[in-house]
Image 1: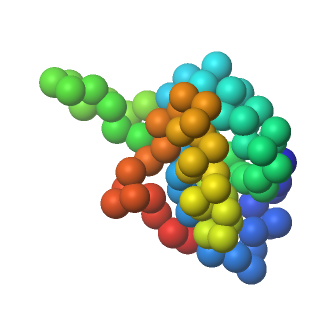
Image 2: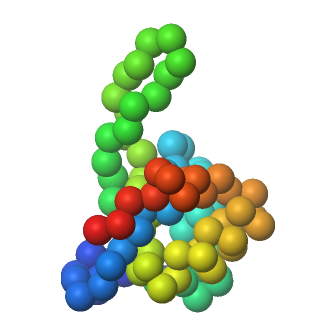
Length: 91
């Protein structure tokens, strides 16, 4: 279930997924909601491109650290690409 950032104020949160397109973001949101995972989404910039690096906007998905493994497994099972463990940031 989508939550506001304040919901996680006393928790460690983890960036688990960056959706690069609106359709992908809506799908990831539906998957997490149907799975009963509380999450927060924020628009932010990321760098993309192989030859020419550019800044692009994406939807950054955060979950509580206690839900990290379940959320990652759920996204992967439904065809989304969670961030690899070494790129997941804890806040």
